[in-house]
Image (cartoon, rainbow, N blue to C red):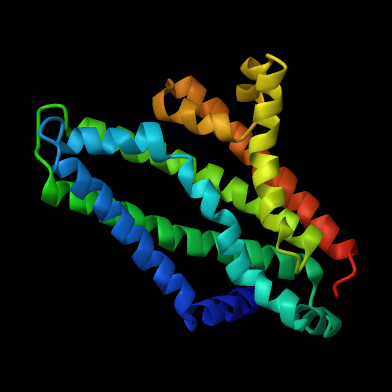
Length: 242
């Protein structure tokens, strides 16, 4: 499995798209803080970091299909995945290796983006008494919890990629699975139930919730990750690869 992980990482490292994605996210992070610094009031580091908690925590979920696409799309299009499987590579290891590689890419992307955001906020914005070490520790704790949610959303994206294979419709299927249940619950006036089992409402709870609420969100993230990882593995083992 380690050889499979290294092989996929080697392919990603030697193509420009991931580096362009890193640069683009870093630039966007800088531009957000630059825009805040132009404000006549509220241009403080504390306010900038609070913007992340209450506005941006769920946004990385939108990038998860891109990471899965980086790892698996070319193999589906060029039929090299079929050749790999025909060589006797264990399908479970192959599928899990791709999910692990996508998670590793997400860690790198998240570290660069968050580093650029926090670094540019420290350089461009003002300090005030609200920005304390305790606040910073709590901020990184909440962001760290959300990383479990991003891993869960990666497993969902990987499941739909395995289901639809080379068809790019997996991206739309992923977004539908993420957002449509919440909209349907709201339509039937049942939105209060969303926080008990849906992925996206957990990011709001993590941003402002108590320790108990964060713990419950962690449990939902983990259950979602395990459920879709297991479902994707079973599907990949049984599905014909074209």
